[in-house]
Image 1 (cartoon, one colour):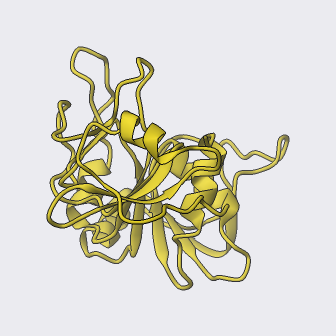
Image 2 (image 1 turned 180 degrees about the vertical axis):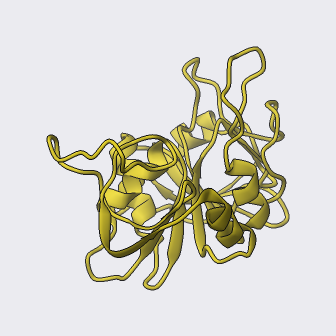
Amino acid sequence: MLDKQGIAKRIAREIKDGYYVNLGIGIPTLVANYIPENIDVVLQSENGLLGMGPFPFAGEEDPDTINAGKQTITILPGSAIFDSAMSFGMIRAKKVNLTILGAMEVSENGDIANWKIPGKMVKGMGGAMDLVASAENIIVAMQHVNKAGESKLLPACTLPLTGVNCVKKIVTELAVLDVLPEGGFKLLERAPGISVEEIKQATAGKLIIEGEIPEMVL
């Protein structure tokens, strides 16, 4: 199965030349390190940056240069820095081509829960609800199962929702799946060394399997 870096590598293959991309907190931030060199992509950070680069090397961090998850980042030549009001104006005006988010749960009809676990302290929802309400292309980077081994790909989310009918694709440590408009997770690829049966066992929601399922290419 994939580790977090592997999930980020696979998602980086979904980014197309000319895209403006927002990377959410967690695994999605790692995608910045794996964008192919032969394409021109602009990364947007919701705290007010257009033109985010990969993570800095140890010893080269600038504590004043951070992403929305408070991680130190690099800024590419030609980048722009602005206030969060302008940043969310870009998001709400649908100027972002692709949004990559983490999730606690995703339902088989594309609902996402990624901001709160009842009874646990939370700082707030952040920009996730603006992103899922405005984005037309959302890919989720997440673990297929939780720490108890229970599926996070469900018939219906049990946690408070962030957005409804919005997730288009999911990449986990086990698989790549499309969320179909009519409902259901369509299995597209499996992680190296992972069988279709293992993915079936880890998926509580409706899983659609058609033909031979190829291994991911990273």
